[in-house]
Length: 285
Image (cartoon, rainbow, N blue to C red; front, top):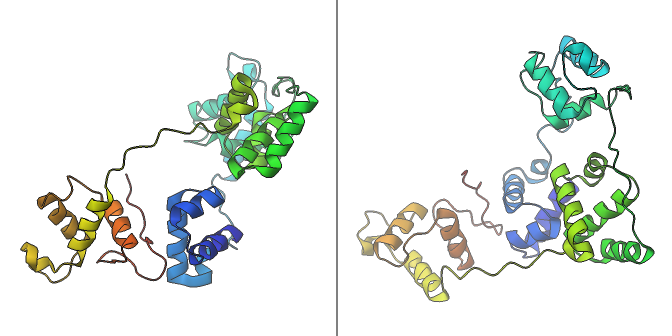
C-alpha cells in the first residue's frame, strides 16, 4: 500500500513512468496499472482487491493430508528411486500419482513450512557458508548502505550467503526469486565485487529523431480531413495508419505513438489527460 502511494506521489512530482519504475525497483507496467487504479477509484484503488478477504484454500483437507503424508514418508517407500526429497521431486511425485493436478514449487514450499519434515528424508543445503575477508565484507556492507537499491540488494545476497543462509532463505528474506539469488552468487564467484555492478549496455540508436517526433506532433494537431479521413478527430490507430501512409514513419506501435504525443501535450482518443499520462493498460504480447 505504501509503495502504491509513493507511485502516485512521485507522478504528481512530475516524474515519468520510467523514472518511477527505476526509483521503486518495479516494472513500468506496474506503475501504469496503479496510476490507473488511483485515477478511477482514488485511495480505494491503491488497495489490492483481496485486501481484508479470507483466502480460499486451493486444496481440500484430503489433498492436504495426502501431500503431508508423502512429504513425511521415505521416498523409497512410496516407489521412488532416490533417498532424499526436494521440492521439485516431491512436486513431480504428487502430480505423477494424481494427488494434485498441478502445484508450484513456491506453493509447495509454503505448504510444507509448517510441517516437521524428517531430516533423514529431507537434506538441507549442504554448501558451506561463503568465506569473506574483512576488507571484502566492509566493502559489501558499504555498497548495501550507499548504492542504488539493485546493487545494495545484490550485496545483501552475498552477505546473507556468508552467514550460512541457503538460496531459498535468501530469496524469501529479500523478496526475490531463487534464480536471481543464484545468478548474483555466480557473478560474484566469477568477478568478485565488480560482478555486482550492472554492465552498461551499448545504447541503441534513436529510432525516431527529434525531426520525426515534431512531424508526428504536427500531424496530430492537424485536422484528419486534410489527410482524406472522414472524421474531425484523430484516433491513435487512425493517426498511426496516416503516419505510415504519409511515410513519416515506417512503423510505430500504439504505445510509442501515445508516448510521443503525450510528451508534446497531445491527447487523442484512447489516451487520458488528467495530469497522469499513459494510464491505459499495456497491450499484452
